[in-house]
Length: 246
Image 1: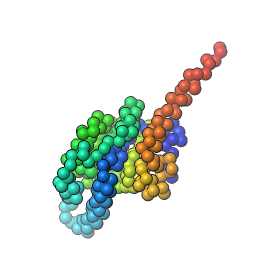
Image 2: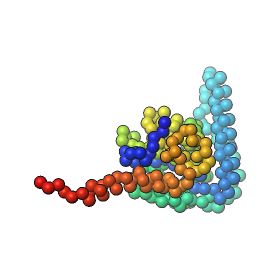
Image 3: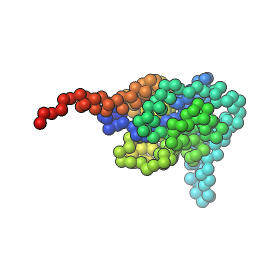
Image 4: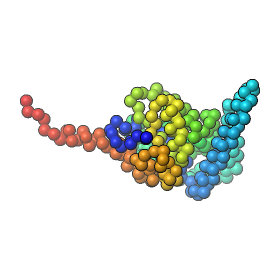
């Protein structure tokens, strides 16, 4: 069973990791994103088959450097700039600002290439300033739904994980949720996954509780606000009480 992130003040996040495409930025043509996700899924399935084949040939040295032929081919034929292809999400930018103001450590975890795409997106839309770490497909041997990229992002925050850390991860695909859950098992720490958008919501109902399914970005903005405003309301009530008479 998942954790209800709004059930207790103790679930205020101290670390939040974000997917990129479909989460922080949106494609002008949604069909392009669907095609990219389909090709990424095909690449993942092909990688699993290749891994099984390599296991059958253990006597040979395994090259763990990701080849990423599909990803590189996609970006090689890309004709438009990221500004022409994508739109930043204004509401999510407000969320990033709120989280940074609250001292939350932020990171990007994407199955897209960083070189020639992901890093350009962060620069073009002035998003880089929010993040302590960014992990793209070429930075790990296996992409989501494997846990590698999320684990790498947590290691790249610039500080050790603390016992008190509450970790959130938000993405718009089923594989984002699966990767967060796999990373939880890999590091022995709970990572609370949030599914964003109708596509994710309809495919992860059995994986996460309703409180972690965000049909719109505004729903996630309210979840973040609620997580932090709880304590502020509690403190204001305490401050309003009269001092005890001695």
